[in-house]
Image (cartoon, rainbow, N blue to C red; front, side, top):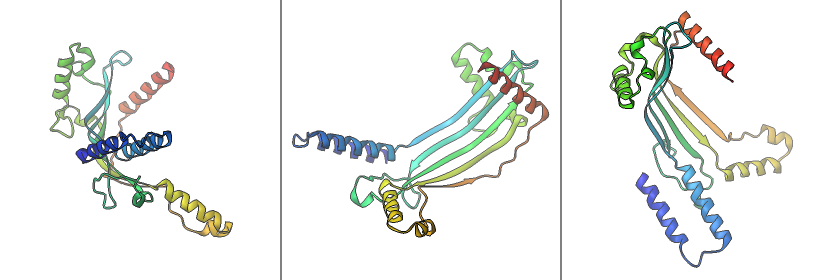
Length: 227
């Protein structure tokens, strides 16, 4: 799919280099079409996300909390929610909606208010050794770190979000129809929303201990004082 996108953009650039299409309006139209294609077909894929906060100065014992995520993916799809390149600059596609699918895999939150000093990554100065420590504490082949299994407030869950955005042409058509009818008919007439979001998420179980709650409260107080 990426190769297809690149090929389309290359064809557009070659066509734009034609000496017969050098007017300002054509150049602006070309850039608008190119920008629309890029924005509509942007894909995001991020793997092995880990955001970690450590504090050994403001607590009697070291605090470690963080967010872990196996994968984040955002893709453009067709009406069957299959990844596909879309070109809404073509006349036959102008009224088609933009469909995006967002997948989150194994996202979890942990908080260890009485962590071990030996687990404090911030104490390690060498960058390579920091990564080694991360891999030791959070192996990539495990959904939950064995060393922090009891610290997870929410076990890793996955979710799928389907986003549907109406095209500008479809919205303009609906507005024209509403204006052409009476006010009462316009209120009664059913219209498609500009955005539709369908979220499917695994069962979530949250368990927060007293020490974890106190740690969160103190961190928020520190952030508020910092501001």
